[in-house]
Image (cartoon, rainbow, N blue to C red; front, side, top):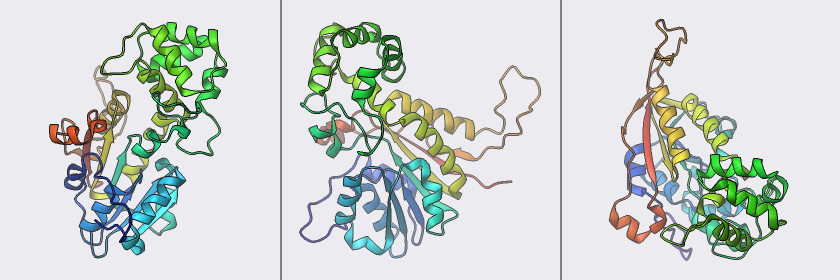
Length: 315
């Protein structure tokens, strides 16, 4: 849909129809896809918002920007792209003359093309450099953290960002054998030291998740992006977020819940002093999950959780 003749057909992205149903594209609307990736969601929004709807697609990965632009060439005049993180969406919208928008999508998942390229260092199943940067020009790599942090710092990182109960013994083993420069070496060290047996989840999953989140400041950028999104949305505009692990989803849920309440003072405080006014209305009380048919077609969709909130008018 919207791909140039002869170009490879874009894959159907995670929770594709749920995203379109949630963001409610309309003719002539303006939308931000904060994680453009291969352009699958953006194509659906552009198609539904035809003939005049526009999309600003952001991604820190230059490969993703190039691929999406090639696949969405038929929408060229209505697609605007910027190599940037979604927490800078406001300044890139302003550069287009957009003071407000009608919908914002944040798909927080690691793209298939990043996982499947061993040179990017995201996969613990393939040999590659210990990199994990979404932005290839980022200053910090996973190797920097693995080889530079003291044992307690490394253990804390794996505990907090990977929710790994055996983080202390994993960190100790890493420190004993470092320097570590490759994904497979790190994965093997984690597998041997953790005591886990290979099952449905690889023993290295949580450690790799923690390093990737830290390298890319994923939680910090998510918080800043959510705050920017609320300020950008028109009344009635929708914010749609797809999370893939509990740390992300918890942060989105807490933000949505806070912004949908008029008062955010502690429950034990007898008088409201915060002056907070609700800015969002919850559209989904519980996250939307992929059905079994989608999971069978795309096993990586299994952990996806989609939440939707709507901007309410300012009193």
